[in-house]
Image (cartoon, rainbow, N blue to C red; front, side, top):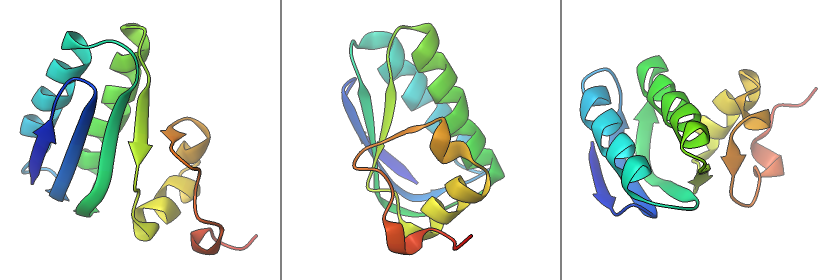
Length: 107
């Protein structure tokens, strides 16, 4: 996993999982604590995430709210969009441009 960016936008690439969670959490918390306004998290380069990685995202979302900011997800890959819908987290998290209709499960 690699994260690059600043206090306004971070790009995450590789795998966000139990092995990379601590580094990701540190980078997200630093960006949230040091900036103002929305923090955009670009997930275009993210290959996969596990439950721990999703927990890091949710923790950052809660921390953003406590600091008066908003965490905005950009470029959420389709397989991760399906997970957000299945867990109903798409209703809680801010997702730039919404979710792609073709990736959503049929009800």
